[in-house]
Each structure stands twice: as structure tokens, then as C-alpha cells.
Image (cartoon, helix red, strand yellow):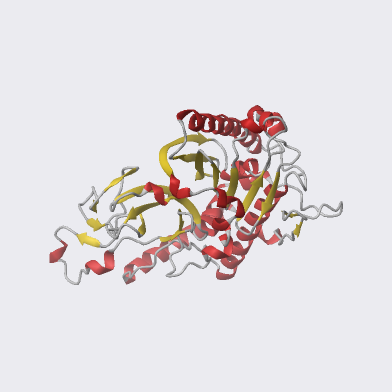
Length: 417
């Protein structure tokens, strides 16, 4: 299947949108096939090619107020922890995996800790991830605590305080943050907002019965707003709505409908590849992470922040507006996914202007997956960038080779008719 996937060429509109050629003799404006939204093999490839090696927007530094503050996250099955170090500035990241038996060392969603203690065998780690204690291993010859720190995660804090992670196991990630996101934290429209003047307010979430890309396709166009979002339609001039696509993010632009300027909530929205977005207004900003939990399900996780000077009325007006809109999007995506899985629909034709951002998003996914799969075919093995390679014994290598042999044999048997 992957050998048939070619690279897709884009062109640029005058307003900066990256879009596809809409000539009749090309098919680039066709959406990704439904199989890309329902096959587990595709999801596992996405885990390897995207979620293991791209920069992921996680949270904002406003969540960390004192040393030891921590947050627990999961992205496409990868569990990790972010924790504010003793210096009160550095945010450490590490996989939520004890180095002894792989039990999670953090089980709470958030909190404050001086040390992380595994509740399985009592191994404990400092908030910098270094092993502090391994009960009774002092009697084990050649055991070295320095070799058993938690697996680190790359962390980047951008110019306006958003916290990013990269799970690539390499000392330096193959994909630099600036490769995808240079300039994302210095957008002209952000100059109207001082993010230091907001405070964390609350988190909330929804469970989606849809592939994570279904939500990305939905979020990145307002073609559906006229029909599906009455609140948006009431205050927004939808004839003006447009997007600008950059290497790793998509900017959304809108203006109030004439005569509703007093109701305008003055928002600026950005989608961050692969699965996050942020919308800021004078009274409020929220982040969304569409976290894949399987090929056909996801966890919609929201962080809500309130401006220090926002009145209760101003904050609640904006807060409730977005919760209604996001609930409507969930209904749309749940319904779409059911038909994507039914086996009737393959794909549809997308509008080259009104849906230029979903086209750009899908082309990005296609290109990344195709490139990664080609590397795997060349190496004749799956490539897991997040996998940690630690010193192992000869018997471990033999065991791995034995298991790999079984997998190959099983795949061959599945192909027999």
C-alpha cells in the first residue's frame, strides 16, 4: 500500500494558504481514504512516524507555580511526566515508566512531589528523574544507579510560555522545534495578548469515538460553521473566514459580522500539528489536545486559562461559547467516524479554498508517513524513534530475535490464501 503513495505538491494562495492544485486532471483535492482512519496498522505507523518524533504541544508554564509541581500526560499510548525542577525555571520531562518493571511512577493527574516513588517495588526517583533508591539492590554486584535514571523526554518552552515535548530517544531530536514551529510564538496577532496576565482555571474533557485525524479535519475548516455552529454563525462574518498554513501550524482568521461587533469575543486560533490547538481572547484562552487512544477513539483534553482582569460574566460568556461549539464538533466527528468504518465510503472531494487547511494537514500526514515507511522498508524493520536502547545481555538479543521470527512467520501465514 505504501509504495503507491507519492509525494504531494502544494502551491500558495495570495493570502498565504498552502493549497493544492485544483486542475481537473489531478486528484490532490480528494481526502485521505477512509482506511487511513480505521486501520490499526496505519495508527501504529502514526505512532512511530508522528507521535514518536514530532514536537507535541503539551501545556503552558502557568501550570507550574512551585518546584515539584508535576503533570501527567499521555500521547498515543506514550505516557510521560513534566515536573518543575528545584530551580523554579526548568521543566523536566521523562517517560512515566519505572526502570525496574515498567510500572508508572506517577499515577495522579497532577500534584507536587519532592520524590517520585514507584508503588510496585519502591524504586524512587528525584524530580530530575535520577534514581534515588532501589531497595535491596545494594547487594547486587555491578548495579549502578547512574544507569537507571528515568528515560528523559525533550522539553522546549517557547517565547510565550507554551511547553512542548518530543519523545525521540536520540540525544538531539531529528526534527528541530524550529523546523515546524519557527515564528509560531511571535505571530503578529499575539502582540495584543500578554500571556503572563492569565491564570490557569480548570481542565475538562470529552471522549471521542473517532480517529484523531477526523477531529483535525473538522477543526481546520469553517465551511461547516454555517450549518453546524449557530453561535459562530450569529457573530462571525463567514465570508471572510480563512486560514494560513505554515510548516507545522495553521492560523485561523475571522472577523465579526457587521452589527455584532459588541458581541465579538476577539479570538485568535492556531492549530499545532499534529493534534493540538490554542485559542486566545482578551478574557480567556484554552488549549485542546486530541489524544489518540486507539485507531478509532481519542481523548479530548482541554486546559482553560482566565485573564486576571476578566469579570465572571466575561469569562463565562467565552467559556460556555466554546464548550457548546466543541460539543457540536464532537457530535459531527462521532457521526463521521461511524460511516468511515462502515466500509461504504472511501473519500470525498474537498473544496480547494474553503478546505485548504484540511488538505494541507492531510498532505502533511501523507508525506510524513510515506517517508517513514520508506525508511522502514529499506531497513526491513519497523522504526520506533521513541524506543530506548539500553545495555542488554546476549540472552535478551536472542529472545528478541526469537520473537521477531514468530512475528514474521505469523505475517506470512496471514498472507496465505
